[in-house]
Structures are given as structure tokens and as C-alpha cells.
Image (cartoon, rainbow over all chains, first blue to last red; front, side, top):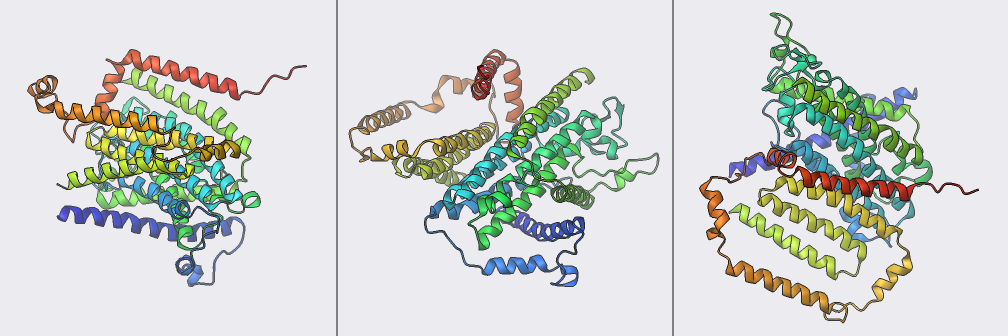
Length: 356
Length: 182
């Protein structure tokens, strides 16, 4: 019976983490945007405005659920739950540290990829259920964008999986550091299994994965509906896109899902390309830095550090770049990212055939 | 024990939601309900140790086919949708009777097969058991599928990929801009 208690605890821990992360990153986003636009950002609530997001959450919890008269009430109510659940379930397979993964599966990469595609359906539900032309247009744009960008993202992931030779996220992590069970070769020919550190990360094991990671990162921005790909919620044209009609806790859940999605794609990218929970410090001679800095708590620390850096870059890009037009969005996806991702896939295949 | 409970819950959801899909008057709701059916069936695949098939079902049907269905629904004209809702829709109305009949006949067939076969004593199952050719819960089925696709079933795989290629080229041709005629 303790077994099931543990399952519930793990589920609660993931939810707690998502909520805490969303609180922290909404504050961070405001401060980052303020810094980039030469403002101060929130300053009133608490020292430097640190309690601003907590106050916002209190406000959202108290708000009334407003349902438009002509909305499809069932779909309208269910949509935020489905959007959030899709992202929440994605966290189940992602490893945090050596031996610390909520559910170990031997096809983790595929699972995460599959479960986050459900989000598109939730967005469609929200757009249709609201019975509002702005919501519907936003939802159609969002789904078209998510479905299109799943192709370059998929091929970038596959080219990393071909180098790693497994779909198990924990094994992919393990094989990028000193704990590896498979040969680890820097640039494909120098054995660095004992050295570890940054040299053993997938992007340095096979340098073309650097291109694959950039493709993955760009496409993941589109999957999260974040600027410069935030056409689904383009304020100047669509009010707020698919969540125009939402208020109170329902809106909070859509918001939570957006921030959880940012962390999820960052975590998947870090796991596949940037060494996951492995340390960037290599073993140098008798100074065994990599061995010292690998372990349960170090694993969580490195994972968090890398993911937060990636999330920071996502925010930086959001407040720096202007929004793309729909045709530019599709051109970028189908004419630039998809061929490049295919090229990465082919190089991965040749790489594996020639070097091993 | 708990596995059995989950299995029956999943089957109940699958059957109930499928019944809703075919009986509902509300076309969009039935498309969304179809998603529940597909998800429950994916859960049943997991019970059959076909976890790869379960995930593929979610990727292809939920991420692809359902979205396509919804887009087709959004793009179809209101008149043709209204025409559909004017068709009489009682359970035994003239245009549902054949479907009801086929469904009942198929159910009878399945029931007959299920009752007349003793699965434990089937020849090939006995053989597989004797050779210990059995998948256990912790086995890596993905590896198995990959190796088989690249060796035993390579020709069918290539044929299917050519078919998909043809569909893609066709789609690109249809979507292409008409050359300007002078």
C-alpha cells in the first residue's frame, strides 16, 4: 500500500514544483522584460516586488468564473484541465538526477513527445468552446503552428536519439557523463568516458547535434506559443487568442500550463542534448571534478541550473524579437527548419555507421 | 486486482464514450469524445503490453487525425452541417437500421468466436510457451519492433513509406500556387 502512497506523493511533488516554478518565473519574466525595456517592473508588493505573483494568484483564486452565455459550457470548462494535464503528464518521464525519475520507462522520449501533442486538442477545445471569433482564430493558429512545428522538433529529437541509441531518458542522461555504460567519444573519436564533464555531452559527442539543438529550441518556442511565435495570442489582432474568455482559476491553469510547458521543453532539450543532470566540469588529471560533482543533489542542481538558463534565454528572446507573420512562420518551419532537421538526421545515420 | 479494476474502468470509458460519439447530436462534442475513446483504447493497449502502439495511437490519432477532423469540421459550410442534423436520428430509423444490424451481427460473431475457442489450448500459444517466446512486462518492446521492422518486415515498411511519399507529393501539388496563364 506504501507503494500507492509514494505515487500520490510524487504526483503532488511534481504539481508543487510546477506551481512554484510558475510563481517564480512569472516574477522573473516581469523583471527580465522590465530590464530589457529599461523599466523597474513590479516594485510595490514586498521588497523589489517579490510577492507580486503571490498577490496575483490570490486575486485569481477569488475571481468569479465567467462563462459566456453562448459558450459550449462543457468544452469551455474542460479545456483548461486538458491543457494543463497534457503538460503535467509530460513531467512524469523526465529524470531529475541519477536514480531519481518519477516513472522510468524504456520509451520516455516518445512518451513525452506523444503526451504534449494532446495540448493542441485542449487549445482547440478552448477556442471552440468559447464561441468567440478571436478565440477560435487564436486556437486555429495555435494548433496549425503546433502541428507544423512538431515535424522539425521530432526530427531533431530523432537525430539525438540515434546518437544515444536509446529512447530511455535516464539512459540517455547516463551516457553523457562519467556514469556512462556505453562508449563516450568526444567529437566521435576521443574516448572521454573517464573524463566526463562538458566533453561528454551529446552536443559535443556529435557536433551536428548543436544544429539539431538550435532547431529544437526554435521549434520548442513555437510549441509553447511564445514570442516570436505568439501569433495565437497576438494582442494587437486577437485580443488574447484562445484564452480571451477565460478568467479566474481557469485562466490560472492555462497560464500554469504555459509556464510548465516552457520548463518541460527546456528539460527535454537539456536531457537530450546538453548532458541532462551531468556536470559540466571534467576530470582533470587527479582533480576528479566530474566525480565530485555527480550525485543525487548535484544532479538536481545541474538540471535546475541548465533548465533555468534555457528558460532565461526563452524570456530574453521573447522580449527582444518582434512577432513573425503567419507566412513567415510557415516558411521558417517548412523551408528552413524541416530540411535542416532532415540533414541532421542523415548526418546522425552516417555518423553512427562510420564511427562504430 | 487493481490492474483488473483499471482494465474494467478503461473498457467502460471506451465503450461509453464510443456510444456517445455515435449517438450525440452535437458534432464537435462527439469529435472531442472520440479523443476520450482513443485515449481509453490506448490504455487498453498498454494492458496488452503494446505500449509502443499505445503511444503511436496518441501521436497519430490525437495529434494528427483528430485535429484534421476538427479542421475539416471548421472548414465545412454551415448548410451542409445543418443538412446532417435534419436527418431523422431515432435508433431504429431507416438510415440507422443497417448500421444497427451490422453492429449486432458483428457482436454476435465476436461473441461466438470468444465462446467457442479455448485460448489456452491454441496450438501457436502452446508452442510459444514451450519455446519461452513470451514478452514480459519489463521487456524493451521498442527494440524488438525496431529490429523486426529493419529485418523481417523491411519490404512492407518501404512499400508503406513509398505510399506516404506519394501522398505527400500529391498534397504538395494540390497546395501549390497555380501557374499564371498569360
